[in-house]
Image 1 (cartoon, rainbow, N blue to C red):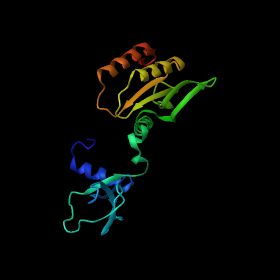
Image 2 (cartoon, rainbow, N blue to C red):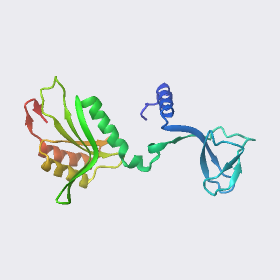
Image 3 (spheres, rainbow, N blue to C red):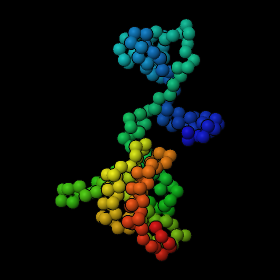
Image 4 (tube, rainbow, N blue to C red):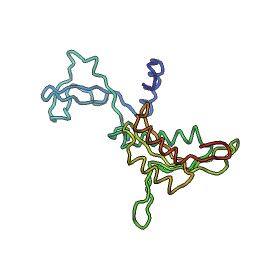
Length: 206
């Protein structure tokens, strides 16, 4: 989807992911005993293979080598379930702000603030950013982020953002998601927050 069905872009993207050890090529082969399919790296492919499901040995189908068994597997932190517990969206949002929005940025992922031992506020990331020499705004902004990979923003997320606005007046509340669009409930929740936090600046309305 990220390559918009462009074959040349897809090939370059795939080559980059394998070069950076995000993906590794191997084969997905089915055990003759339990019919469980296991992934094997190129280094592990041999005449006799060990099934990770039933722990028995089975033979590589050398008589009729499967042409459709080639498969990639994610490695390292990318193999963690649930999109690395939401870390992908947080990392992508922080990278976008640092590279495309801010002139300078100091950032921290996933933090919680407490007062008298009680949780006051938590966010998926926070940042102080400046907009650069050409901007009319010279005061650093505090950015507080709420991130969802492909889940939806819920009432508790909007309540947390409302609380952030109360604790940090003037902060920029940033909602980040990998979803292509927002649903009606999300739009309504965001609209309420925007209307409460709207204020005039010397360069227009935020």
